[in-house]
Length: 340
Image (cartoon, rainbow, N blue to C red; front, side, top):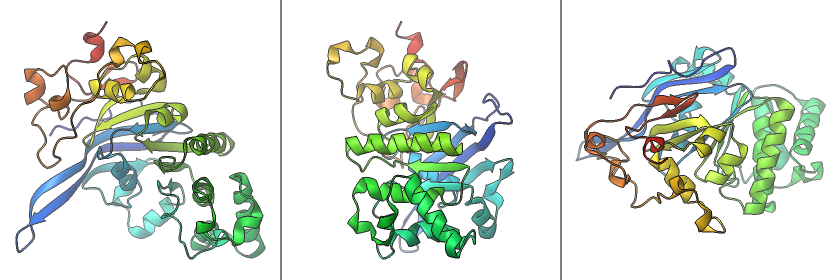
C-alpha cells in the first residue's frame, strides 16, 4: 500500500506530535506450530499532526483502530511500522528507559474509570504513584501535591483515604485525570474517557477537561465513538475507518462541509428531536456491519457500505488528499461533488 505522507499537513513550531505512516498489525496464528497466516490491520498507515494546545478528536465505530492508535502512540502497544515524532524526536526508536522519560510528558486517561485504578490502593497512593515512580516529590511536598491535584479535579482531600470502589464512575474518572496530571504532561491521550459514564456526568468531565486545558495549556488527543462528545471538545477531528483516516478537518469544516460518506453516516446516526430537520447530505444512514478485518476489500474499504460506490472505488484505494484548506478526505467521489 502506498502511504500518504504529511507533506500537505502544516508543520510548524507549534507541532507537538507528528505521526507518519503508523501501522499496527496483529498476527493470526493457526496450525500446530502456530504459523502466522493472516494479519488484522488495526492501524494501517495513518498520518496525523497534533499542534500545541489543541484538541485533536479521533472518532469512528468500535473496531476502527482509534484506541489502538492511542495505545501505540504511548507505546503501550508496539507499532509494526511508522514514526511517532514527539517534540522533534522519533520515540519509536527509544529504549524502555527512554520511554519512561517521555511518559512524563505524555499521559493517558483510560476508558474504564474502574479497571484502570488499582482496587487495592487508596486514592492518595493512586495519585501519588507517578510522583514517586519518577522521584518528583516526597514527604510533605508529595502530600501537598496530591491534595492540590485532588482539589484541581473537584475531589475533596478527605477522600484520599478511600478506595476506588467507594466512588461513583464520574469520581473515579476524576481520580484518573488527577493521576494523569501529576507529572505536568504536555500531551494527554483521552481514550473514550466518558463512554462509560451517564450523560449528565459526561458533560461534567468534558467541561473539566476543557477547563484544565486552559489552566495548564494542555494538548489532547480525544478518542471517542460518539460524535457529540468529539464535536463538543475538539478543535480538529480525524475520522477513522478500518485502520485508516478517511477524513480530517477542523470541527467547523467537518460538520459544515462533510466530504466522506462514512462521516456523513456517523453524523446521521446521532438522534435529533425532529428527523425532518436533517440536512440532505446527512441522510446516508450506515448499513451493514464492518467488513472482515482479515479480508478487506482490495479498493476502498468503505466500498461495500457506500451508497455512491463506483468501479474505481472497488479496485483502487483512495489516498488522503486535500480538498479545502486543512480539509482532507480519502474518497474518489467526495460528497460535495455529489450533493449540492
